[in-house]
Image (cartoon, rainbow, N blue to C red; front, side):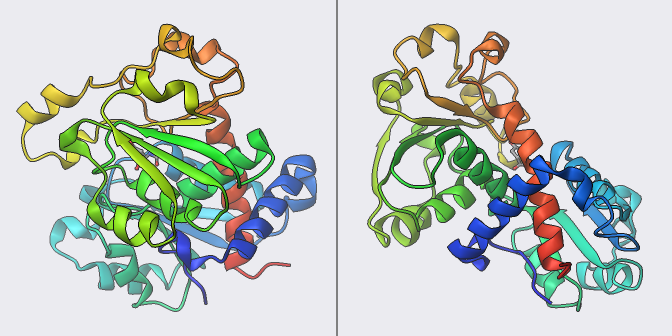
Length: 304
Ligand code: NCD
């Protein structure tokens, strides 16, 4: 049985297939309402979540299946010292598929090595978040009509932001992508993303600290939250948390068909006034996340 741990576990052909299925679900949801009758999804969230967990659960309900799980480590036997491997062996007796979020990088991979049922990585530490990437790719496809030929700016916490790392990995396989990395010096993208993903795949990229200087070049602006929970010092977080605040004034110089994306939750980095701008796509991203997770679970459960 296949698991999804890293976005690169899926070929570009498989991603295209998932996007087509998601688009079909959007057009014709009734045709899918019974596809997972009798199936159970377990959501094991050892870290906070609103969208990811609830969209997985809503996705399974909309496919006619059922859901069980926990939403915090302290309410599971992890609080008593149980290992991830033992938790997964246990839950595998109750569920057909597992979506798991964990603060430790690699925990979902360990989980997948201890079960026969599919594991979906719903975020592991500052590392990866492949299903957010699928939501992002569906959004880009629906907004821009293609996954090729655009300039995308990533702005904010590029060091700890796992959604950024996964989306860059995914985009490194498409044509004509230019990447602009906007962050404070302290929150620059990890070196491995530059060498193993961008340079290796010959993706053109630049780094800057100034959003205003580059905003007019962008087709997509992917804003991110400064990841407070991954900082070693609260002082450093407080110093960096408001490095970028996107508002209507900054958007004056942006393209008229810019797509402003954000995986959410937002704290301060996008003013609420931007929500009414036609360029704001972040709540569409939320809805797309549910549809692409429906498509993904159909695929991993091998439902026709
Ligand atoms: C992101 C995450 O958990 O990495 N949220 C999400 O799943 N949509 C982004 C974040 O927490 O900032």
